[in-house]
Length: 134
Picture 1 (cartoon, rainbow, N blue to C red):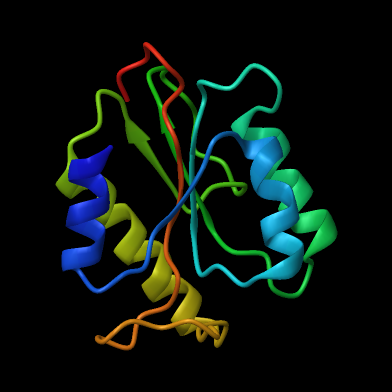
Picture 2 (picture 1 turned 90 degrees about the horizontal axis):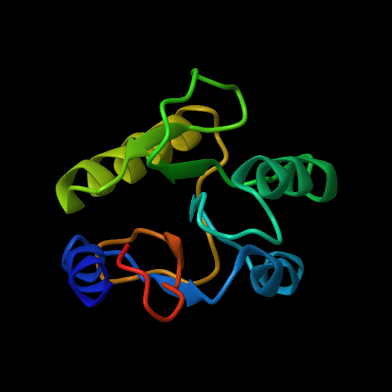
């Protein structure tokens, strides 16, 4: 996870970790995120449930969701991108960059917290649970 954080910081992002999708929910109400990265490793809230929650609660400004999964999944409008696990860090960064570019193309970019490169708080990353390699 530290390698991913370093990679995103080097690319000009300000990533934030959450221990689970449920733990991240209050953050979406109190702060702005340009993109969310989630995985299928949480039994309490699936990636689909998180994406639907974001769309229902933040209809005008729901951030795009990038899903990491070890399963073969069909493309879905719920996700800006799907990245296969084990995750290649550059593939994940590329997926996040594409999601941010698409968001900007739709006039939804911009956040309160930005980095030196002018990019926003992206992404909100899942924090691995103990014993799990993600």
